[in-house]
Image 1 (cartoon, rainbow, N blue to C red):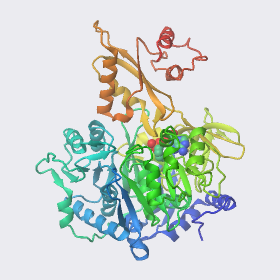
Image 2 (cartoon, protein in one colour):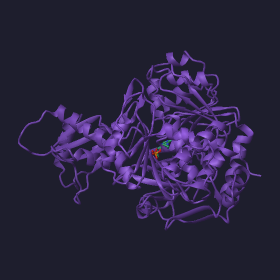
Image 3 (cartoon, rainbow, N blue to C red):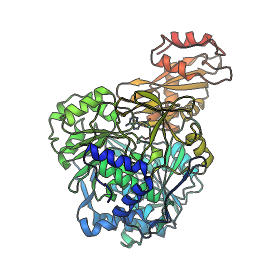
Image 4 (tube, rainbow, N blue to C red):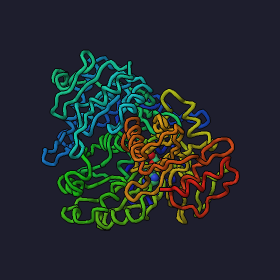
Length: 635
Ligand code: WT7
């Protein structure tokens, strides 16, 4: 018997020990008992981190949507699967039962097939948080097409890069989206992107905004009439355990975004099992994760993990500040939310508004609170604990990544005593290691180092789409035979982990992972810019904000600096999206460089942090004289 539901600390340790001593038996029991397989596996796990190659449940056959939908039809067909809460609170929420979800996904699947989408084809989904987003994700999975969801806040350039990188033949979008008081012309963004995407044959357009939009003859089709005609039964495609389920892009410190590839069986088993335990989900509960399905949090913990458990999961279309800062608490009260999962940046933004909005609502349904995306600072943790959880709802600070597919380090509520700013203990099956700079593992407690994982887990990404070498170089070469996360962490006296942040050039802004390179590339496209360097600096709501150092070309003419700043942010918005805009832009005559020409970001970071008491040795720089000049003009 597997321990599918861990209930106290002793049990956690028991389960954890078993998961490490005999991982294959551990995962096999969970897989056997809780899922629907068309054929069982021949082998639970084979792995080699030097290649790297990892296979879970090889030989097994299944369809993840049968597990997320069909098998619930007999036991909970009328139970609500998805609650859709619209942007405008005056618009009625929609409750979609498992039966209705089945029909909607089947119809959508048949539309995809009729439009020529086949197993293995890539489909780009660029939709706001409306039911069609979850339904189209599931419809792809049902017919074996690989979905690539692109967050609908990304610009047309960023969208085009992602469409082309994995050769999507179809894009699913909507005529527009609502975001607070604003409406956004999503279809216009898609049209711009597709100027650069010759491989896209079909665009399916869901109707959300009642507006007239341009439809390109032969390419663009309204979704609804196609759904109306489609059959409501679609036999699921039988997939191999290791068939790709989806691609999701994440930024790296260099180069273009990485299309992380997740496969079917291991991802399903791990997201389902973590969801059940990390949120202690019970049959009657209503669970709400405020993330967007455009990020991994939404894939794993709005769609797949909850639905694999037959849960009721909320999709919220809007923003925390509309119509006012009480909206989250209004939704918690309205739908009697039991588990609430959000990001530190949202908590800080809401805390800033005081407790008036909180006190106006009945939050007594809450049982478990979660946070994800970046380190949570102590103040925000206590505000969340005091005002939202009333010190009764444990906070699960869940550390994980797009690459890991599921939650890796986290308390188990009611079992693991929480500690502010600590993600606490590894989830069963996860074997973390802290490494020093010479590549040696640091044993014992009260130590800090670079966080690695030394054994495979079922939901880890298997490759980067089209570039396995890059996958190897990024994650498996820094430390031999280990997966390197890019994060630093410390381990306290009882073995709890605290994630201290990125140790590479990735900056986390409002919980969004932003690589420095693509932003610098965008800035450098401004005709007046010669060179640029981006660093992060602390920001009380966003966690980090971006600080840019920009060298202008010497053209002899003088330019208005404020206008230049606006233009630079405009280019960033066009190339990446508004989330990557810079808070501060300092114009400078030089950037500190090593003799090999590498920008010394360490120094720039200290200046941006206003922490220049100890800049370290600058004498080895190629141009030490620029440092003082940059300090004198710092913003
Ligand atoms: C990076 C991954 C996993 C979903 C959201 C982000 C940071 C994530 C925590 C946490 C401290 C965290 C890490 C990680 N991060 N959760 N609980 N405490 N840091 O996914 O965009 O792939 O970003 O987010 O730095 O490496 P992502």
